[in-house]
Image (cartoon, rainbow, N blue to C red; front, side, top):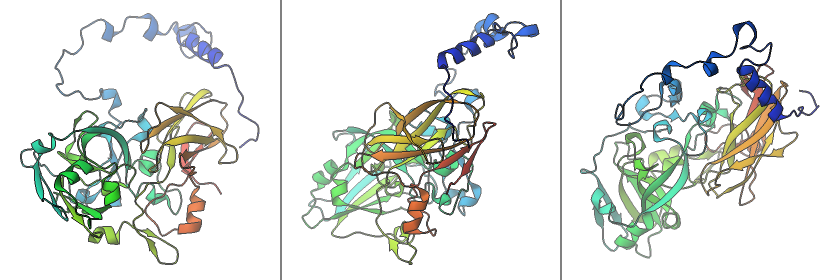
Length: 423
């Protein structure tokens, strides 16, 4: 890569020249010359000369067929069975911060079950004054709150610990979604039951065959945890725990128990077999870090990326990405064009909400030179997203979970993009 800075041209002049070329007004353009003016702008097209689809043609709206590539995708060899597997959000093809439910990644331990509102029950028992059982209609009587939060699998980026593995940010960083949830603060339900003074932990379990039980410290349960039944303004999808799931902002996704059926209050943590054997961070000396629930600050450039190469050639280029932190708000995102040698601050677009995805943009003029794109998130605690090598120095290579290291994309001269690492 050249040490010379990328040349700055007038964006207005560039866009004006390409617009004129598109209209067939600049000689030598792809659409001008012998072929004449661009028919897409000067001639009446079929879609403007007849009626379109009527209202109610699709009672539940679906994306137009031109966007049929924007779908969740899985990796078949990742798990033993599809009923205990995961798929990935197409974050490379989305903008803004809110993930449509139909695109949001899903992770199951025994498959997605069908549980109706009429059959739904939620029990609170253990160290409480009054054990209770709620129906879905009972939950609707409690005061509601709304929160936007990201849900990230602890294994997001886990296949990258030993080096660049998969092509596409959908596969490397797509075990995440960000939705607006509506539900009942968990503290209100616990207050209704009355937690006894010796109660220190809440054990949450689901109604599916795996139950996927997880223990939460009572302090977290009384803080910002929600018993949710709406996401993005509509009922939860089946694969996201319909009709009720737990929302645990900022904490790893396995804590967000779906099809929530019981909350037990105890004086100590109740550890499920899977929680004990799987969700720990292995250290080089053979020990393991337990209860590392918070998802530290992280970011990824979603475009350009391996699934979104640069197709328009040289000129203005919008670099777009996502940043998030389980410790609060994102306050800054830096972007490097040269693999971390030099950094410049990106623009945070929209609201930077705590424990939610934040969109960032950086506008450059690309002159066709190779780039090594990186992004680095900083949250309100002052935490700075580390490099992968910095993580490996502490935690080694025998890991799966909590990889929040900086991702590198190699943009080639032809616009293609590859997942790489830099020394």
